[in-house]
Each structure stands twice: as C-alpha cells, then as structure tokens.
Length: 323
Image (tube, rainbow, N blue to C red):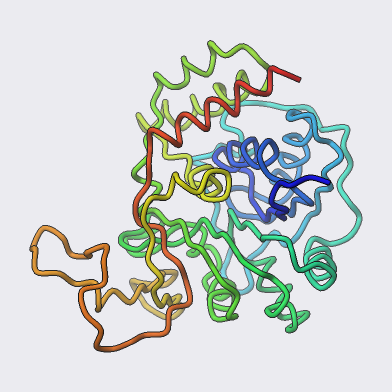
C-alpha cells in the first residue's frame, strides 16, 4: 500500500498544469484526473491530460472529461499564454490512452461519496467541482480538503482584480468557496514569487530524458514570450509535494465577487485585521488585532521558498530518467 497522499486532480492542461502533473504523478498517489475547459478547450485539455499520463509512464491513471463551458459566462481562454492546443507550439499525436466513458462530474461524485481520504486539487476553473456539489449536496461533507490554484490576495491577471481561473467561472468558484469544504488557496500573490526564465529552459534541455525535453519545449513558449513564467499550477501543488515550500499562510475569510462591474471574479480576502502601520506594507502577514472576527473559510498562501521549489521541480523532472 502506498503511503503517498491520495489526490484527484481537476485541471485544464495548459503548460503550467503539465508541470504540476509531472510533480503530482511522481510524488502523490493520483487516483484520477478530470479535465475542464479553461486555458484552452476541453478537447485539448483532456487530450493533454491523457498525454501526460503516457509521457510520465502512468497510463493506468484514469482521465475523465468534465465541462467545457462555464456555468453562465461565455468561455474565456488563455491561448495567448498556452497556445491554441494548450502546449505552446508543441504538436502531439493523439494518445493511445483512452478517455474514460464516465462524465468527470459523476466521477467526482462517486469518488468522494465513497472515499474520505482523498484530497481534491483544482488547477483550472471550478466548473466541474461546483456542478458536482449541485448534483450531490452531501459532497461538501465528504471532500476533506481542496487545494486550489486560483484567485489572489492582491491583484489579478485576467483583469486588474481577478485571477484567470476564478474569472472564467465566478459563479462556480462562489459555490465552492461557500461550500464549507476546507480550502487551501495558492493565488497570484504567491506564484508571482517564482520566475522561470529562458535560462531554465536550457537547464531542462541538459537533463536529457523525454519528460525534460518536453518540459523544455513548453516552457520555452511562455518564458520566451514574456521573459519569465511563474508555473502557477506547479507552485500550487508544491504545497502538497513539499509543504516547506509554502513558508507562510493565513486563515481568512474569502468571498468571490460575481456582480462587480470592475471586480467580477475577484477573491475578496478580508484583511482588516492584518492592516499594519508601515505604509510600505498594506498587508502584514501576522494578525495585528481582533475586532471584526470574520469566520475564516480559506487558508491563503502568502510566502514561497523559490529556491526550494526549483530544487524539487528540477529533481522531479530529472528522476523521470531513472525509470
């Protein structure tokens, strides 16, 4: 029996999702992967997820397709960041691994209604998870924890207020954040603390195994376009892979804005008790006083050990050459 933490991953691969899957498949006990439309359309995200199980030597991991479209929104994609097929300019053949016939939402319901020892990792829009909660309301008592890459304690990227994953489907995010399920949120305020550059692409090329070669190709797309890339999803899963990478977090109340003209999709963190006197620190990372006593519903990651993360990432990718 494996002593690795059991996880189910809901994701929208996506370049950074691919790096997250490399880490999870090596270090965690991945029970299943559910694809959602997000960074690109579902026909590509589910294909890319299947491809990653083959590339990492784990085609036994089942892959399911969930929803392509948000609950209310028109779809928003990030193909300028990930390429039209989600893998930059890399073209892949249709994987031999087949997609599971069961719908991804039904898989989530069945899995968590029958097991209470599996962590849910979400790396894309929260559409599938929200639909699962609507289909089976008891699910909110069955999911022990969600590790969510999404939102931000500060600024967004899809808009000045909203991070992409939450912005794509705010109504879904609101359902999940209000469910009462314990949530650990790794947002842009943390992932911006990591920066992979074209120099890192060269380091990957020098590892010389198929996973590293693929990693170099897809990282070259984002790092080449923007000069750096954060690999947000890989940063998020590192909290489970090596908890010491997240060096500071705070439990606060987080709401998801669904109606604001300028703030739709914003994760509104209640920092009122974290306001200090230093004008250069809008948010102090230790509670300063107790006055409003908001009920925390999310543990928000705040500080990140970039050096440790990089070591884990490169060691993980290099280890795929040991098979």
